[in-house]
Image 1 (cartoon, one colour):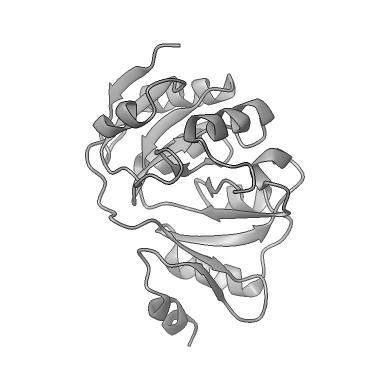
Image 2 (spheres, helix red, strand yellow):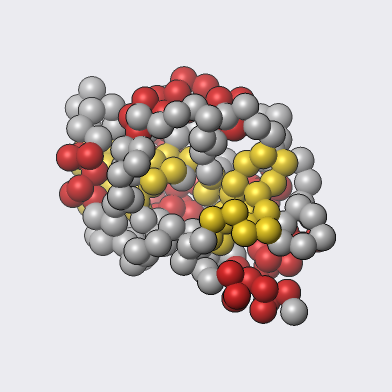
Length: 211
């Protein structure tokens, strides 16, 4: 399948282009798109075949779960079982933005994307293209980095076709992304936050927000 390469305004993305991306996702295809950190790969997380395609494209072991990007907190709540008080506080403080939270996954998500687990990592990004795709698609989309497993995450669309030459249906070029680091991942399901992955939001800033 030949990949379609489209330029998109990162600040004011075309609704037509966002609808095209959503249509590709609804047909089980994979789309590369810019976020507020790096470029990601979007697929429908409810579609097992689409999820399997992402694992194949990345050469990623199925023991590694896929994170999600949502348009808003309502979309997050629709794909998780519950939101702890601590998660709500962090979401209110850092969303939209590059902080990812761990939740107990809802039943609608494909088991393959959870890699045998029961949790899912979700965030609401501060990027009109990333959030716009989820909004038009009416459901969170996968947000794994657009690179082969073990490779360095990509910040420019021109690098994606070289890294993943086959299997993508659409690459949205929103110019260079600003993040040299991925999002920070926090498990806030309990009474105290747990740092799962260091990222662009400093751990100290997370702790200060809860003080």
